[in-house]
Length: 137
Image (cartoon, rainbow, N blue to C red; front, side, top):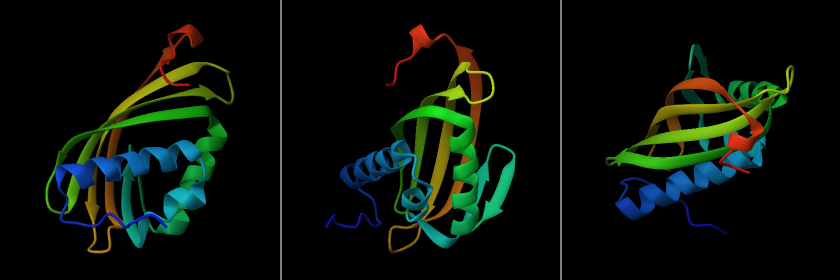
């Protein structure tokens, strides 16, 4: 069993938390991703605001039905005792048009004492790319 990564974060544990999040999101499994959040986790994802694991699972199910072949990279930006900020890029193919897209953004995370994320604040921008421009496979 994996050791829980809990605050206060060091550089080493913050990097491990970011890698664990990247791996979970790349699984494209809403259940697996939602397990890393508190039951009442508060999210802002672009213009969507919602609370709770069930809402997270619903959101991610819709997201990955629309964003096909999703592949993500997260990079630690900064950390404090119980907060981590990351920059990210991900690529995906639009389910409706087939157009490849790249998304750039930032996330700010706040964790409870058990290492579950209780708050996620995300901003991002998308732009079209050619399939030949993909970085993440």
